[in-house]
Length: 172
Image (tube, rainbow, N blue to C red; front, side, top):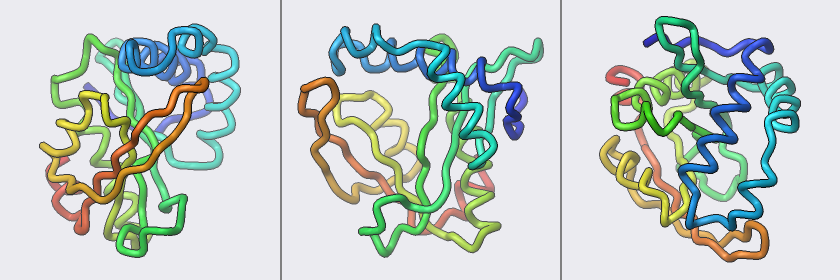
């Protein structure tokens, strides 16, 4: 398993992970009609832009197949003074989850935030997503809860935070 910085050429592979992961992770949480409306072409265009505008990291197999990605940067809402950074997204194909890849994908985000003088980070996760346990296991502490709406359905998000990214950057 190799973790590396994504390039524009990775956009179609990242899009596939993004769409497929949403469909498996959020099944029975987000309406099926919304999940079915997600498509590779639109997500490819999104990730072609994103990889040139922000740091995106991919996990790839020995055969070069991209099976997961992560991205992060400055905290976007600006209302959490004690958390300067944010893990924007981390997705892994369902068949590769639970194998330590997520932890390896968090590491370069934490490292890059530290290199940019950002020592803390939060992440937003849907309350009904099993990934809540992943963030707790990584040492994330409850920060806040927020309501959001996807396709007309009200959902709760939980923010988990880390005050010191050194441990995440070292252990990964």
